[in-house]
Length: 261
Length: 249
Image (tube, rainbow over all chains, first blue to last red; front, side, top):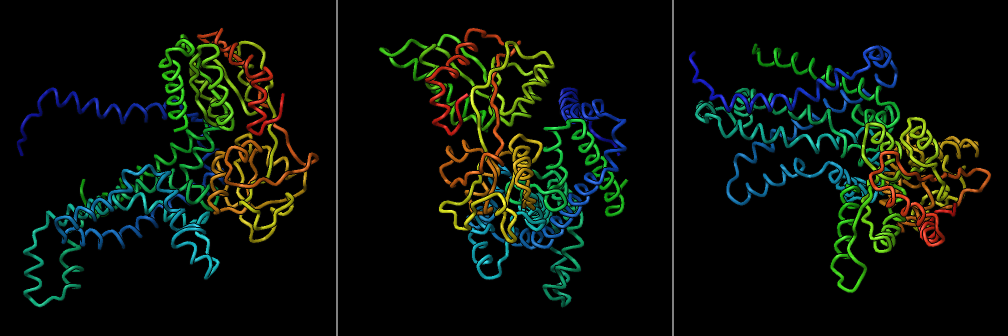
C-alpha cells in the first residue's frame, strides 16, 4: 500500500509531541533508584496498593461497560437539544477537576448526601472511605471516555446489518447482542482501554471521596503522592511499577482482543 | 490552587496600594514566602499589614511543609521559609539552604475537630476509639499526622482511622462536611475554619508544634525578608498570630 508523504514540518511537530511524552518517562527511568526496585516491589505495602489499584480500575471498567454502552446507545439515538444536554452531562466529568468531582460525589453519596443520607438513615450504609467509594470515584471520572468512544463507533456503524437481522425476524435484544455489539468491538475495546487507563491513574476524586487508607482506598496514585512527601525514591519506584503493569496489560490485551500486530 | 489564590491576593494587595493616590506609595519590591498551609489565614493578614508598611509585595506559596521543603531542596527560588515543624527546617539548614538562624514565631497545639454542637459527645482522645465512630487523621508523613500519632500514643489510645489524609485540610473538610465524626487537627485550623467545633486535648497528651521561620540563603530580597520576619516577631505580628489560633512564640 503506497502512502502519501507526510510534510516535513508535520514530522517535526509529531516528533516534538512524542518528546513531550518520552522525556518525562526518561526522567523517571534515569532518576529511578534501580537498586531499590526489588525491595520496593516485594514490600507488602506495594503489593497492597497495586492489588487495590488493579481491582478498582478493572471493576470500574466493568461497571463503565455495563452502564456506558447502553448510555452510548441512547446518546446515538437522540438528536438536537436533548442530545446536546445528554452529551454535555456525560462529558462533564472529563472537564471537571477531579477534586471537585470528589466533593460532588460526597454531596451525592456521603452520609449527608442526596442519596447517601436516606441510605444511611435506612440501612446505616456509609459509602465514603470504602473500596466501593474508590470504585465509584474511578467510574465517575473514567466512564465518559468509554461512552464517547462507543458513541463514535455507533455513529459510524453501517445500520444495514441491523436492519437485515431485524428483517429476518430477530428481536431488538438479539440484534443488539448478535449484530450491534460484535460490530462495535473495536470501539468498545479502545473505549474500555482509555477508561481503564484513566481509572488506574485516578487521584483527585478518589482521595476526596474515598480518603486514603492502605488496603482499603489507597490506590497506587495515592500511595505515590504520600510517598513523594517522605521518600521520593519510593514514589519513583512505585510510579515505574504502575507504568510497567499498565504497559504489560495494554500490550497483552491488544494482541488477545483484536488480534492486531 | 492555594498558590493561585495567594498570588492573586498579592496582586490585589499590590494594585490596591497602587491605586490610592493619597495612600501609601506603590510597592517597590517583593518577596516570595514559602509557608506551611496551616499558616495561610494568619499570613494573609500579616501580608495585609506588611505590604503597605514596608511597600513590600508578598507572594506566598502555601503547601504542606514537607512539599515545600522538597521544592526548596530541588532548587526552588524563595526569600523566606515558614515551617510547621523544626525537623524540616533543620534538614534545610543541614543542606546549607538557610541564611540566618531560624526563629520560632508561634506554636500550634492539637485539638479534636468535631461537628458543630458535638452531636457524638466526644470529650477525650479515648472517645475516638469508640466503635462506629468515623475518625479521620492526617497521614503520619505530614507533621499534623505525626503529632496526632504522638498524642494518641501518650493517651494510650488505638484509633482505627477511616482515612489518613495527606493534608490537614482533608481532615477538616471531611469533618465539616459531616462525613467523618472526628479528626485531629491544629487549633488554628479550627479557628480559621469556623465550620467545626474544637474539643481540647489536655496538656499531658497534647503535642505542641513549633513554627520556625528563616531567611533563605538564596534570597534575592534580603531587606524585604528581614522586614517580613521582624514584623512577624513584633508585638503587632504576634497579635495577628494569636488571633488566628496560634500561641505566642
